[in-house]
Image (cartoon, rainbow, N blue to C red; front, top):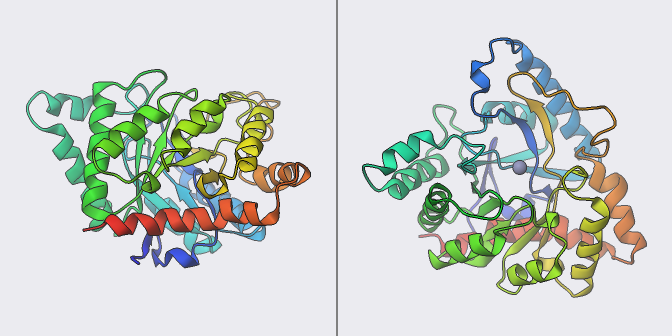
Length: 325
Ligand SMILES: [Zn+2]
């Protein structure tokens, strides 16, 4: 069994422990560098905030956090490495690219006019998975892909196929972003048609969809399904996320469900000013303080909770190895 690449070094899948599969230490929307009014000294404050949050999570039993920030959303793997080293919580970072409408597609769209852009992207992903990200010495541990609401653009299709190639070359698992609870089955179709086993894929943000048939389409094919936006009440109510999750647990799907919040702790450039009463529960301890107690009240046992938080991330990172060259 190959080790998982974390930002502070390799880790055996068995040693990952309780894992949040989708949180962000920092993101920056493409173009953030152009904001000259942003505080140049923010990084020190960002690191302090990340260490504080990671230590809080450590106190709640979290041992590993996956930050699937793609290459084009202000990814800062050195911030992740510093925060992991100071907090004792391992972090797994990603290679990959974001969806077309909010990512930075211009470069590869331009290249697509002249050659095989899927091969170009796959080469980049493989390099970050095997040799490291830039000069940092940090290797990515998984591949991130993303699609917008209701359709998959040709650019996003190319990213998905490049991710599949990078998976086949390295064994690294794939995690996805979906919008508005759409396109998960289509993502799975593309990735599996390219040869990726479903058990090496987390279809992310599925909890934004309350139609159980949508989840069953993914689960019946063997993929992991992300209930990874707890607390993002603005996009979809937790009550519905919980209702669907409890139903799927009742059907015995605990071995394919993973939990997280998709919180963003720091913003590169100037931080958005959100109304104070908005998103009051969107923080990375929400699961432990409010959601797990509600699952227990609904009769979900500790074994199922442990399966989702500990066993599934371990199997996801380990099982993908079986297909490695
Ligand atoms: Zn995310």
